Image (cartoon, rainbow, N blue to C red; front, top):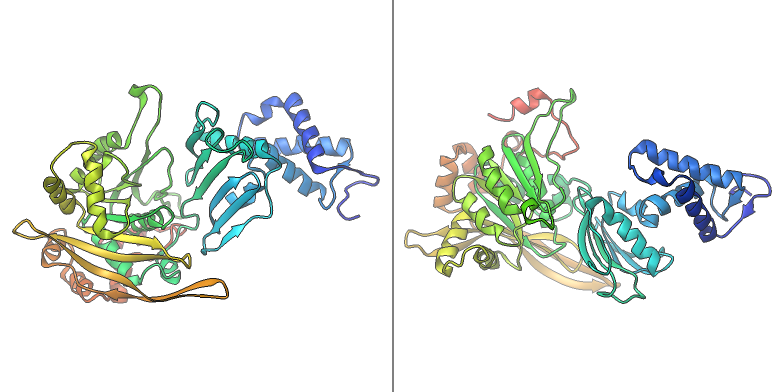
Length: 472
């Protein structure tokens, strides 16, 4: 038999082999699980291999190597979820119950896995293990927690009594921008037209603050990440995120030299109020480090007040917030600012409009495609009146179901150019007249795009000469 690694191998049920190996490793090599470096991982696999070889153990349809890997993933990592967490084609794992697991793929497909945990307790044990690196403890006292596994993997988990005991655990595991999309990827996926992305990138580069709105899962954080990547050659960037880092803007050239000017920061939770580092504190300190652009992962609380203050005092701020339209983004920001200071609505409306004149709204449609549905400019007229201009819009022309699959057809429309007031700001912030003229026409020549909006993914490395040549 090809799957057997010795003659007369002792074929056992996988669960029984797992139980024996776990007991052996935990009692004989208990300290082996203390470290997470690659050398320690290989050592654990050697221990597992020795155990199954010495006892001549086997499992049907698994080679020795496959059995060792599966046992290791079960004991040290994320069980069968490991392969999905390491995939660049996966965006989200939704664990509704120990035996009901859905996966959202990067191409929009939603899949129900045939695989599942062995029991409710098994599911709970694995999620606790995944939360351990972030210090989040899921138990009776804290049955709802948020944590992270790695910089770009966020976990939200619910345990009994919040969910039924027979469920074991419910969790959402999100991988943010696993593919580090470049402009061409957004265009290919139908998220936006290249001209839309070019304009957003140029607006940010020349000092205009932007807020991307949308619901959870709409792709707004991925768009925010690309915007920051598109300007990192030219600007000093200071990023702020909650608890774990998803942005990865630091780049090195072939010689190992860092060619970007980036500081990444994250908040810190603590039971001791003196040890808490929140978004507001990071923003306060960040403003003293002379950033050109401040990237805030999300405005969800009183930090919105500090963000709009920074945006109104000469810094370009790019961020996201939960909202259901471009127009609704401003009342949303006003509500968040009120958590800091209870100013009257008119004052706050004027402040957030001045702070974030450009708002984009992104949405996942019924066919699972993600679209930038609208980009607007909020102009404050000399009279003090606010006027919302739609710059770009996606128009749905057809929405039908064919063979159980939703098909949506539509097109992007360039509605209006930016206002004269915005044009003046861009000129004052250093935008060349040639670029502004092409900006207003909505079409950029190839040499302008190559010079002003790099169309690259974060996987590419820049030479010092290329970086120096991009600042003209």
